[in-house]
Image (cartoon, rainbow, N blue to C red; front, side):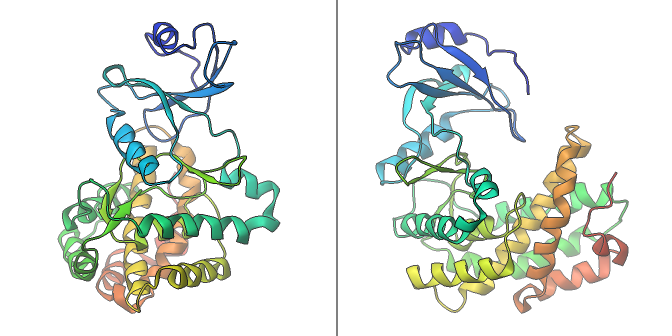
Length: 329
């Protein structure tokens, strides 16, 4: 966690009506974004706020502002925006507090079913809306994400693979997904227990949604239920899948697409975590790979993943799979 303050923060806070406020740096994530809690000194419109520092050229807060405005306009709980200077990457926004879903459940595991059911209900409400004004989750995007596995994990593991065959297998597997995601729903793309805030009024606040696209409703559900950062039991996953289907009337093909997108997402995440280690010097993500790999193997067992499963059988050595991809060092 860095304590270096963003350039221009004092003048930005003064202009926003928060001059003289206390500034507390918070732990960051896997991106270049940084966050600070701003504690009012008797002048702000609330007791506290969050400052997002999304510095160019690495970051651009405009997509966050765009998606957040759309979510709030449709009754979902994105943070209110108090002030912004997009050119400098500074956004002052509503403070949702410290009760992240993941942290809350560490202290209150008995509430797991209730909290996950509420998170699924939030998704069901989002999916009843017309899709937002966002780019499509195209086959090209799916392919580019899945390719992170062969681009980053496989070299890190010392495995030479058939990259062209990998791409071909994914084209075959994802074709039906593309056909069934029209007109599609808004996909937040990082919907999981670290990005859901439990609010004092009982609602659930959404964060980290700046990469939203229009795609398949199974994507965010699998992001929630096959969480890279938190164990979700097969029993809870099954119960929440059933609850979502009952709430939305999702048809019989939904679970095949859920497995397809689960495998795609999990392959992507394994690649991203390897990249965070090799390129960005962040080895802490390596410890999460076995959990993601477990979910990937479950998805590959679905008949809808047969072409990709065959590629894994031919290209990924048994010792890598038995270690659940966790043998990087």
